[in-house]
Image 1 (cartoon, rainbow, N blue to C red):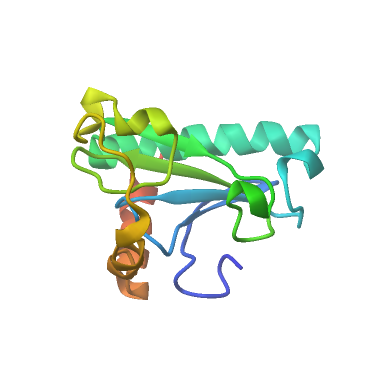
Image 2: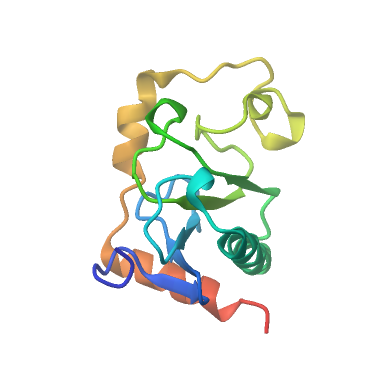
Length: 156
């Protein structure tokens, strides 16, 4: 997947992982850490892969903080279709969160957390999801430029 299509621009890599820009930019700079070995879920990972995933996630989170100065970093991973996993290959999301986000996916406390920039008590309305998905489609050029900017801020 990564490197075979322009829209999956590689930001960082290690023996067990690739960190790529997410083609759907629900938040600008949203990345995924994926395993090199094909496994579907967390339950299929080796101990070394588990370690490498968090090390890679921390590296890209540090770069995202330096690049975007977000209010926070959301990390998550879905296991299986009924948890919301759309791609049957392990991937760990690292997402810089900005004030005023209308991204409805994520822990429910984000809907009421004052610092998240959302209106208190406002539940996620899935009615606007189609428009959000349309809006978050970035061009291959935009994704490559975003990945390059994040890559330039990776810690040594």
